[in-house]
Length: 403
Image (tube, helix red, strand yellow):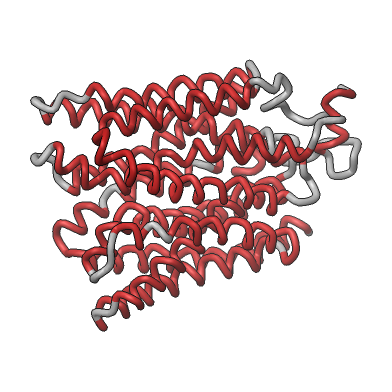
């Protein structure tokens, strides 16, 4: 126990950031869409949107499973499962048969959605639940740093893809990414104390006892459902943009790599809104985040009707910023509202938002095929509106909880 107390906090954060960096590898799908369509001309944008949208459902299943696995085994054990599944899922793309597009599609769905995404869900739950509890006084900031690495990973991987895709092709590029996850995860596991929970005196806010609502108690609290609906709205709007940002940029006169600027904005939103959560509280950050997402959708619509790419770009960047805040603050909001005692289980449960958002987002490809990008932007704006309403209503339930 004493050894765990003396752990270097900087090393804990570094391992969490590196772990979350690998969890961002699935976002490279946005860059790989076009090369995959070239390699398999019979595939459609709608087919690829199904894969991207539903992979989040399997991430959600992985997160839910992680809570039970961590309780039964350990964080390090679950992290090893993530390492194997995520690296195998991406590397398996090297085996896609180019002479059988139908089989290749089912293989891509299985490798990306079921194997890699489920593994990523295990990794997300493990990294989050074994890093944030070490910092009870700054949960929002730490959560922001972790999610910021997700945004940075997609930028870096986009640049790497631009270099190696022409030389290796999309299948071997995925093989390289799978190998990167394997090697990087093994580096983290070289620290024998990595992915371990802190002792009670570190995790407890009073330094003595862990407190908090059980999953059953949390589900009975109306505030939880307001949090969940708020996150579903902002997350879905952000996922829609992530799925279509490259094509959207090019459709209005930009280039695909310009659309990737959404990622650093995502990272900026993670750290700034996460830090704001520690300073101004849950209610204000929820309202700010949802309003930013709604305004981003309105700006995108204005850009469409004015046929102005600069206006479209502002909407893209603001969407990325709000999406980053939505992702990074949600885990910290759950911890600060419902306590640290059952955080691992509660974290897994609250991430059903990922699965619901993924299901809704998976329909955006068909919206694009039938109504174009104006339909996609309208869908995104309409989904963001309920989040604003939830961020207003949650004040009543939080006051009642305190009472």
